[in-house]
Image 1 (cartoon, rainbow, N blue to C red):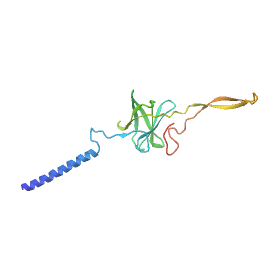
Image 2 (cartoon, rainbow, N blue to C red):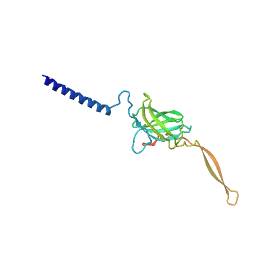
Image 3 (cartoon, rainbow, N blue to C red):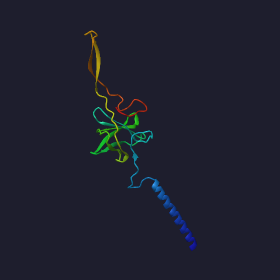
Length: 193
């Protein structure tokens, strides 16, 4: 009888060791437990690796606000806002999906200095969870189209032996693109305006 108990005890011990080993392996590969941070998606400039989300471009609107153009992995990506941490503190940017291209998002806020390393955080509007994070410099800002442009009209005058040409500057009001912020083409490069 002692021999049967010893065999049963050894079998139970082996099963417990196997379950413990399986649990440890699954714990390392599975979802993070309470108190642990899940790995963040890296946020960087868009490139040929097609890692999403990524930043396509930076530009300025006519009011001097900075537009940050972002491509998300899919249209079901959670709604978020952008936070940029810089040497003077942090600035929050409101973000919204582009109407006809919901994987494309643009965020608008205070203009940042070009060339400084900044920390970019995409933060979920539901629960303030950090979705993606990255640190890099803004390498350039697309400038807005000026509202007023000067054009010159050339008028020949009959004075002098060969005539004189007079250039008259004329102020022309430019109009913003009617597609802003929704580009009119199927595969946009969402650099607005």
